[in-house]
Image 1 (cartoon, rainbow, N blue to C red):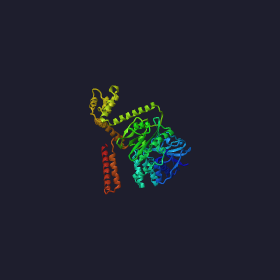
Image 2: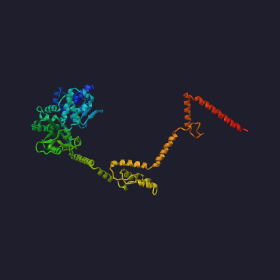
Image 3: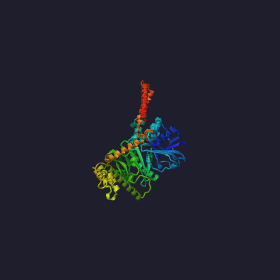
Image 4: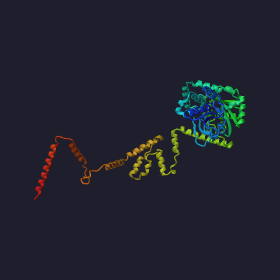
Length: 534
């Protein structure tokens, strides 16, 4: 049974091309049977990719058989997968979205989620050196996915790594990125063959926010007027989809790729409230333009917790500022709905305010002058009357108030040790905290310099140890003479050895002279003894 590689429902370019890429890798490189499948009709840009690189459209499925091996790419949200995904044999997840949760597996699986703009970029990293074995059509699919998800590097989700990979693929294929991206966006902007409901479901994701359910649809185009001209039909389709899927609101953002802005349709007052609270926009009609809004993942639906999002400056579509609203989309934190009562929502807002206050204090401490931080640290030191003697010495020494504070207990009243300790307790001038360690090292060296007697005693001990380790005099002299004659003996032995090994001309004469001297000495000794006899 081959492993099925599938993306999310309403497949876009990345969710269409990434299964094809990973199926090629498993089949051709790892030797595992795999098949790329889709969970719906691909959008016009994905269809352009298949036609441009002469690829057949993958098989479309609705559900999975029990025990079917599968790998999920470009999503980890169970709401965007088949309803019976839990009965399948899930082998791995490769994604670049936030971890939603809700999927359960009987055994551990491989999960790769990286903060990159495109799943295809992650797959090429996982392939490693095997990327060089990719055919041109696979490189073209990967390039198309990256340019689609990054909107030709205009999206705030773009990373330098995504750009580097795309530029390398384009160079290997001999393609111009601006020209190829223009062809892609022109194909994406052709919506003439789709109904209003199909447009809303083409690139749409469901969210549960603050106890309310939303479906957020995004249409990326280079010709937003073609979409906005169908505004009455789209508003009616929003109500139909909300009733069919039992969601509270359907939001439609029309992304102008070239102008780098989004237009939000305002069909009712709740959506108007969302636009005003979440984006700080002033709504006067049935649409509102949001400059700089390009990404649903990073700007429309903020990161988990809903504490930060990027909002544009008025008058500059590229410039943006970080704002911290109390609620995501003006309605609460982005997380699975756990309750809809007002008390829980108010509690979440209070937690958000506390977190923001802590963040502001942390930023203030980072920019606070160093001297002020040191002064505040000294003020926070407990009063001496609340600390024991040892704690006072530790604090005084650590803060650099005086030198030698840890040796005051060695001073005795009226003695030399007291005067010596007092002489070492000189006040220290104020110095930055980074120099405290250096001052302590100088103090340590000075303390050693004031103790010559200890140094001399240590040197004597070393000499004694070295003397004891040396071998003693020979056994025939030890205890008898008390003097080590090893040096003289060694010299004589060396001389005799040299005489034996070298045939010197005067050796016989020397031997004869020694014999005569010994004879004379013996005679003299014998004559002396005879003369002493009676």
